[in-house]
Image 1 (tube, rainbow, N blue to C red):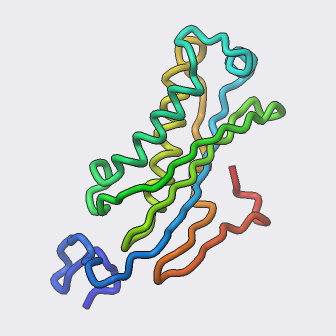
Image 2: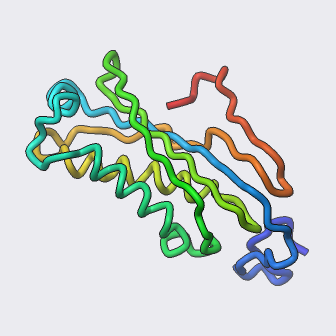
Length: 165
């Protein structure tokens, strides 16, 4: 048998069978950073960008992305999400924003991909809402921060490594 769970005995892609796994409470958090630069950062904080409420659009896009992850990532299972939270933390010294997504479910598989997808789409939406002012933004350091529940147990990213958002 393959050591990769998404490959069958013949090396073909497959969706992992989760029917025998117990339903448990699962949670995951992910984050990324978008550097918006000196032209956008003050306008973003003041709510003065030409496309309107950037924060609301990015938050809603992140929530919708988490809910639709199985339609975007081919081998993800559709999951009944019980909660999605998207938060934004401005970082003035970097002229950046840290986007964090926290996703919860009670299911047979985890929500790491949903949290990562939510962050990525929220960042892309923030980019889209700001690009009329400056297209030089960068999205960086998308990563899983933590997860809990399931057979794999808990995971906590190494915050000492300095590779966080």
